[in-house]
Length: 360
Image (cartoon, rainbow, N blue to C red; front, side):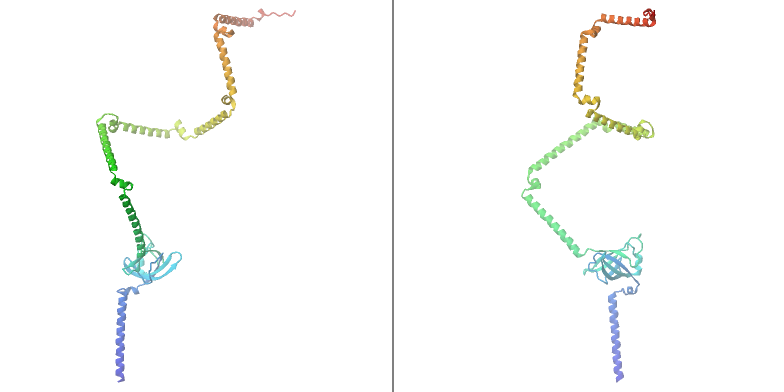
């Protein structure tokens, strides 16, 4: 009897164990949802720096190119970067990540669960090593979207209010737009201006037609390439002249390159400035002539006296006037001078004839 009860009790225990193992197997299958093989894959850690993790939690999935390859292992505050998040990913994924890879916190589904998406980086960057820190960014959440939407709605409200004020002022007939709508004078002015522009355009067309049909200067400037050819020839000659000057060693070349002429000009200008300064200060004869009125008056007086003497001579007064006016006296004086010259010559040649000396 005792063996029967013991056998029944052991059978119940075995049934309970089987049911428990089945439930645990079902629970594990539901929890991992087909990813149980990744639980036993080798892992490696990476660090991601964020300014704000927007509610990211430990255990959140980490995706690479849309495939879940790890989870958030740990997170802590950092005085420099803000938040450092440690993620655990499959070691084989490191071969797809580069040093410039970035991590982005995204929102999964309507419930707002957060996860991390890793970018692979550029092909030219070096491979990332375990434990390195990569840069992280956060997707704009609903709060940011709401703040931006609120600011946008506020601006739209201001624009609508301003449009309402504009429409109201136009309805009251205020401003330029209201005048354009209600005042026919503006329309008439625009119409007259348009008509004048049409006339001006017609005149321009007639002028162009006259130029085309004429044989004058305008026609030749438009059709005849001679002026253009002359300008091009002149430019070519100037280029040749410039090349010749650059290659030569003559005066023009020295004027362009030798600074001695410039130095001499500067010295000359300095001397002229000093000369002008001396004149202004009244130094020297020219300065006295410019500044001193006494010398001018003296010269003026002397010139008047000389003019008076010349007038007297012109009138024949005095010996000088007689010599100029009386031709006979002038002739006699000339003969006398000739005779004196001959006498002096004869004295020099025959002194004994005119001078006799005797001791006794």
